[in-house]
Image (cartoon, rainbow, N blue to C red; front, side, top):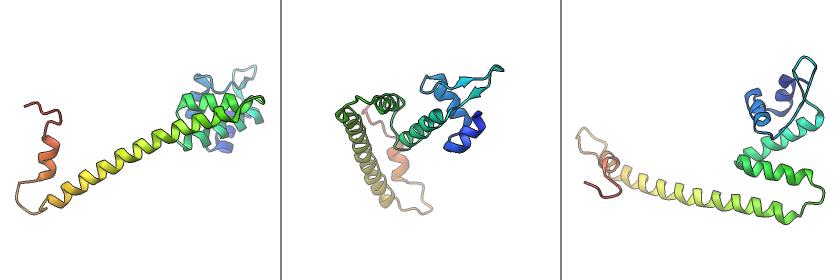
Length: 133
């Protein structure tokens, strides 16, 4: 099938599919005229990659997960380690977002939001977090 049909089947943009090919995640066959010819296996891999990316796995994690998926002798522990590492990064990002929300909420609460020019939000944004003058 052509790239348009593969895109429709997987829900991935053709641009993303071309990128995955460019970085070696998939290798569709080529017709004699040079057009990509996606097999059912290629479409399945693309759907797998789309699902993994929807969990925000990195491209390298996706590469590893796809290799493990295709390896019938894989150890589930290898898959779990990748997922646990990603979960740790998600937890760190959540903690960072929580702190960001707490700080911004405090700034919003301290701003009068009236016609006066004084604004703690702008004052904070203009401050030097490293303490340099």
